[in-house]
Length: 148
Ligand SMILES: CC(C)(COP(=O)(O)OP(=O)(O)OC[C@H]1O[C@@H](n2cnc3c(N)ncnc32)[C@H](O)[C@@H]1OP(=O)(O)O)[C@@H](O)C(=O)NCCC(=O)NCCS
Image (cartoon, rainbow, N blue to C red; front, side):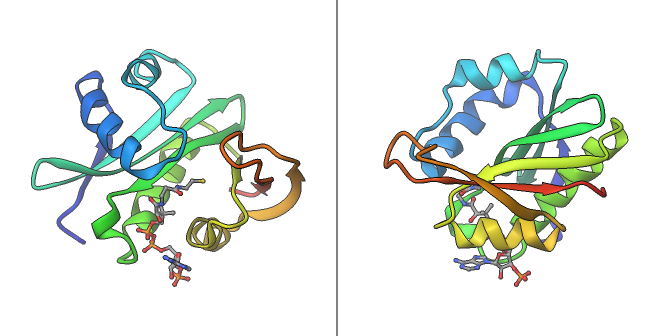
């Protein structure tokens, strides 16, 4: 997957990201949501491009020295080959450059691939939000790494 180019998200990416988002999440964000993110000064998003097509993206909001991850997604056919590790690594580097010293996120406990990915970056489960996900009432695991 060394052919993937990582770069910051731009406004022109909103359509492609929205299409990938719809393939990846039960409660996907809309095109307007992503378009708004391109104007959000707190938002930091990176995309991974393969042959000119966006195959991965990840985003976070950075407030003071804390980053809160909003999205991490990889094209379904390309999963399990390290792309998630690369895009999440690119996001962590980007938020560190903006001064983040800790990172937090919510994840479904049933999402073993995502939980493993985050643990590999030093995030630890510190609690749960009961019934957080509206589509099936699943709890969210709250994960943190306070030592970026
Ligand atoms: C979560 C996601 C981004 C991972 O992307 P990926 O490209 O498959 O990730 P990687 O190949 O880099 O694998 C990351 C780790 O997860 C593990 N993993 C990957 N798929 C797995 C699976 N199906 N079950 C268990 N572990 C898995 C890998 O082994 C790797 O750990 P290791 O390096 O210690 O072996 C991807 O599955 C995805 O887009 N899912 C849908 C969107 C989503 O759920 N995002 C997270 C929301 S919080």
